Amino acid sequence: MRVFLLAISLFALAACATPANNRQSIQISEGACFGQCPIYDVTLTPDDHYLLNGERFTRINGFSEGDLDAGSYARMVEMLETAEFFDLPTDITFNNPDVCPGPPLSDMPSITITWTNRQGSHTVEWFQGCNNATMRDLRDGLRDAFDYESIVRPG
Image 1 (tube, helix red, strand yellow):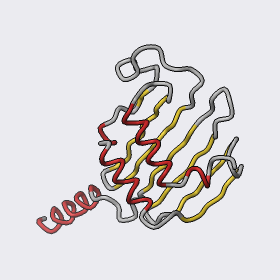
Image 2 (cartoon, helix red, strand yellow):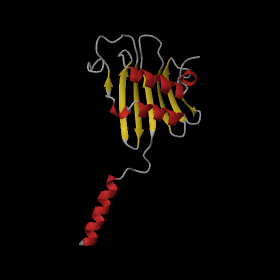
Image 3 (cartoon, one colour):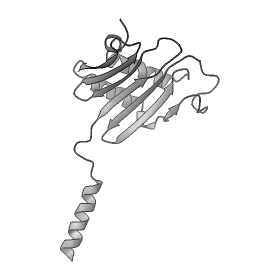
Image 4 (cartoon, one colour):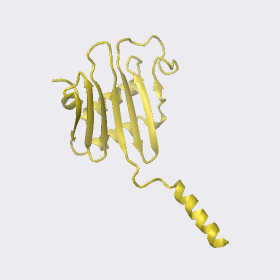
């Protein structure tokens, strides 16, 4: 009986363990505005690789992939940690007046950032018409780190 209970306990503990193949990534999506704002999704991985799906108003429409400068992903992780990303609200849009007070600026795109790491996953959607310095700084820093001007923005 003891052996049986020990085996059951080990299986129960193993079920709680984090899988070894837990994929870490940063995903960034920017949506439409009433003009020609780039619409894209990019996934960035710890090996400084990116997979981009440019939908409209991007340098390359469709899928493309490549490598970023060494250490780019680590810099992005540092930015997310500095911003205490996992503590940010998931909804920073005009639907959430607590974090988007006053009338938001119209004709601005939304950006969705998802960070998946060993802790889990957290997604923040920010309507860029909501004045939020943390998200603005995070957007600008992440764009610099993954070379937005070269791989996303039309030339």
